[in-house]
Length: 265
Image 1 (cartoon, rainbow, N blue to C red):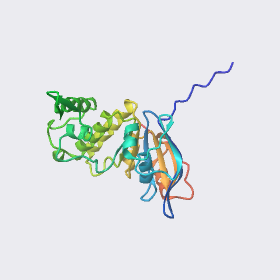
Image 2 (cartoon, rainbow, N blue to C red; image 1 turned 135 degrees about the horizontal axis):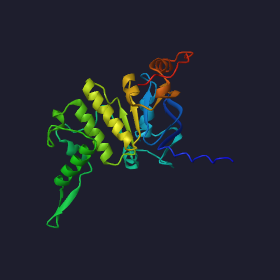
Image 3 (cartoon, rainbow, N blue to C red; image 1 turned 120 degrees about the vertical axis):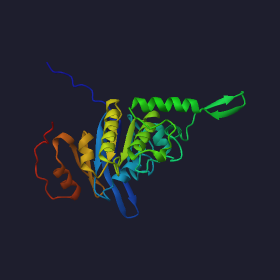
Image 4 (tube, helix red, strand yellow; image 1 turned 60 degrees about the vertical axis):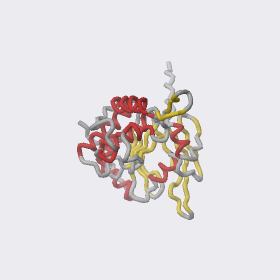
């Protein structure tokens, strides 16, 4: 007797045939991909491969010339970064977009500060709620800062990255995109970023990581997508490929030698 197939879960993100042109240049050429709940996807490619343009379409910075973006099973016209954030797509760029003269709590709530009414007439920023809520989300992600009121400019690169991640998660991100998250970080701080990515994964939040660092990708990714000259040229399970194969796809080797699966400890 036959057994009915189990229903497949709907991908959190589904991109179908995205195209982006800048004049006569086709920056992204008919790219399709999926990202599932709790999945970490590495997005790799050399400079000019189109990965940043692809991410900017997903995050609402650019409107695609062709193709569709589906998020949570619904087509979404992410025509602005604000619309993308409201849908649950949070992008953490290299500059982190943090205000260095403010503390972690101020940055987590920046632009979305809670208020309370005083004497029934005037509204004031509710800094007590901001402090309590920011402490809660930092504790949830096991992020330790020198002091709650410490200014961002006094934090290390890894601590700043952690605050940016905490901000994304507090606002109920359903997908986190990280652009070169370990650039200019030391080894210990890189490990902390890896831990935070794994924490997001354990909570069912998918992550897309853009990086030139293969060690970053192989440390945390479940799947690796490779782009070259605007096209997707590889979509591989991380445990079934090796850095040499990824590099061959990135540089455009005519033939990629079949390699055995990587040995994992």
